[in-house]
Image 1 (cartoon, rainbow, N blue to C red):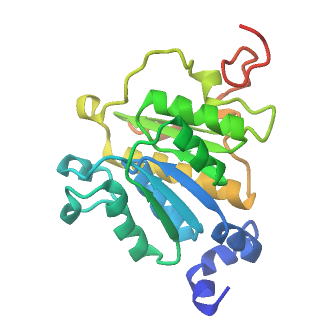
Image 2 (spheres, rainbow, N blue to C red):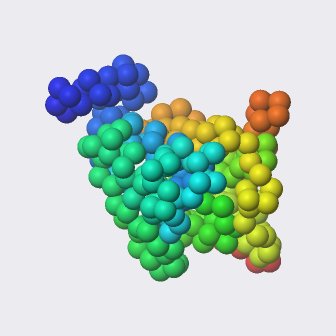
Image 3 (cartoon, one colour):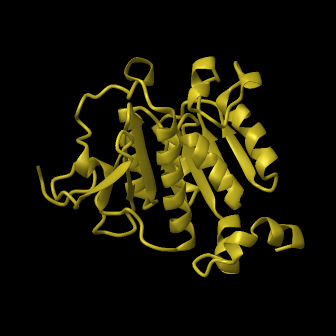
Length: 251
């Protein structure tokens, strides 16, 4: 680590839970972020600021004016630009040392499997139920930790699913893959702007802790944030033996 890096990451180096070894681990880590909207914005910015070595950024959308109320990685001059390219401008300005790999398309399951096989951790920042289920399935098969969050109106959900631990529930243990749910549509339901910052920042907290091995993750707990009252509550979740993804009992 050179002098400039020592200065950039000085506040991490002071932490016993991170320190020099943890920061070195971050700079060698590879992370996939699916979705560069309201959740993906703070996730990508905090992981880049923290010095995560390689970020794979996936989003097939372009920046529109209505995004800017909550998708803080994008700016007004970038309207019409692909979200991955817009994010690149912000992240390179924040930390030019981070390697950014851009995927401005919607990957199919085989493409996702290949990408996930090459990273250490996955962050689900999407707003599509089917995508969440596919990500969960692949992460379970490849034993890659997954941090998934969602936010709509004034309510947020988050948990960490870590298939490296056989006792860990997966996303499908809680949310049935056969449910026919549409996207969490902010355009029709609305969303409180700072709620995305709370949930995305919490995803970044979970990701960085997993990468450096600090603290306790949200594995086995579903965190629920109510922005109306600014309160957190937690629901204990356990592995479902009849889960269609990770279950061990025939349904």
